[in-house]
Amino acid sequence: MSTIRPYYDMWPQYNRRLRDVIAAMTDAQLAIRPAPDGWPIWATVAHTAGTRVYWLCDQLGEPGAETTPFANAGGIGWEDDLDQPRGAAELVHALDTTFRLVEGCLDRWTPAMLADTIHREFGGRAQVHTRTSILQRMFSHDAYHCGELSQTLGIHGLPQIDLWMTE
Image 1 (cartoon, rainbow, N blue to C red):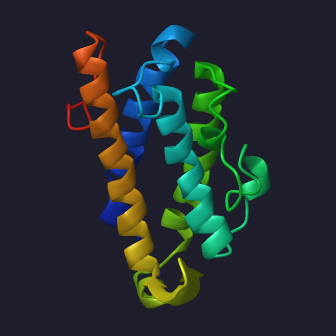
Image 2: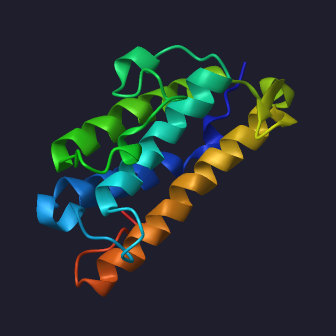
């Protein structure tokens, strides 16, 4: 039985590139905001990691939330408490542990499983999602925030997250 890992073969690289840039940042750099009303870098990274647990564990029922800093990803996240900034080591741990959940799914899920659906209520509306739509959402969510972070980093003269650089 084949897995879906080949369909998402660049995702581990994207996570690694994000992780490596964040690991090298100081607390002052992590506190930079793209705009006065925007989240600081650390909160965007925390949100990116927490979203993985929300979709995979809270919504799809995958195991492992307790191995991450987001055991209750459906509740208040780190990014919701801006008075408690997170440091590089905490963020790297969050990215590493939540990406292990992603990798577990990439290794266990088969192409036939991608059509499985979940039903959820959000914002007073019933929604139906497939595993495919959730994976696409998560993959593009990671890339979206890497782009957002890269723009903020570049404006401040800091190393950007180059997702497509060849190894």
